[in-house]
Length: 575
Image 1 (cartoon, helix red, strand yellow):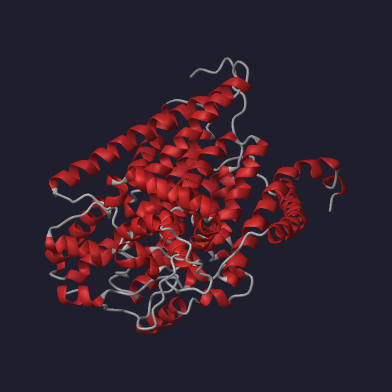
Image 2: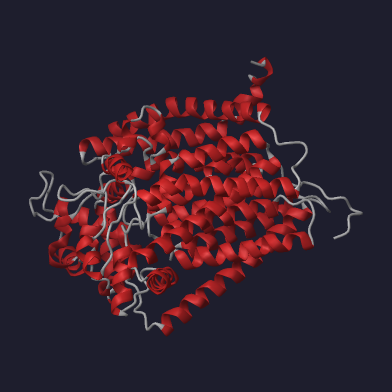
């Protein structure tokens, strides 16, 4: 190994990563201790001990991460000569076909598709004609039209679900293939081939591709948005050649807005970061330096703002035309619901836990019971808000806002430990890369198919309507069902961590540290979009594969995000 790699500069450059490493160990330590003990009291001794431990090991981890980055920059290079259009197009086509073929066995095994998650609710809306905005109407309508097409063409409901599954698989494969074609163009065929192989054998890709859920469409649009924006911001010229990418960006922006209700929040966050980046570039650079990057950032900001406004408008039109009922906003209150429920369990005198000290005042009890009806706070489960959330009366928040805020903040100052513990327990899967609670959140001994990969049909709802499981490859179906139901990925030494959600959160935290440290302005948009999406997840109801899946798909293309970016522009260049 080159001795020049180890230098004072390496130690100095490691400081930001060491800082992030200390935070990483501290939060991971908190989450693991909470999982082991069930409750944490943040005493001076416990906090000091964890802090010292975090500093020692966090610094080591930060240094090692920076060393890996230095080695990667030294030995992994972008191709000096980019592949041409024909080669890139061929790479896309080959990748697209191979990705579809990798999904085909799962499609045959689970034919016509996996009707898990919220699909049965949306199908129920289609049959009753009573639509709700809680689930994106665009997605519900796509399911409806697919079913109608199946009935019209094949006189079969299952054929309709198969048509939907086919459309979804094609879109996801196309997004992946687009990324592979960019890797082929900018990095080289070997690297692209390795990433393609990983995408083909990573089982979550095929499982999600054949699952009827809005999250797969969102994932395809999310990935597409990051890829095309990365390509746009890496352009060394501006002009007509950008038009095709701008159109793809509009398409992906519309999709992200339409297929997840929190998609627009992630986009807004990313646009704000783009605006801040513009300001930094204007202040820190002179004359023509980074002018192309500034122009392209402006193009991205305008394009996404317009596409988001159009997307919101289309959703409103769909809502009005279908007489859709506004969705309940309780999903956004998941963290406060968990915090109030935990505080009630530990201080109300209910006797549910041994630590209950019965110190909760009557005013707080009354408001919590009005907010969490029928003493549903006693249904509190640390890792998922759904048991309590189902009985939440959001009227209290909208009509007794001052009193709610007063009680909520007052209890925070009286019982901060419970608020912190509730947040950590709800997000353990995201915050601790070794956490396994994420795999058991939905488990029910009476049913199969409720592991991390959910495959269970709501047969009581779907069978009477005429939908049925009709596997075309029963032996494979049984093997895949056992693998998913038993969360078998947890039994794979070392490699199990690539399946676990926590590793992705911290991967992007350290990637963000690197981007800020190295002033990788081109990477800011992709990372800010991921950060904005993570913010919505950390305040969501639980950790699920379908929630974290969009950020999983970005990882094979990280090298594109941190690749070359335009720094200067020839003054004589015509725009």
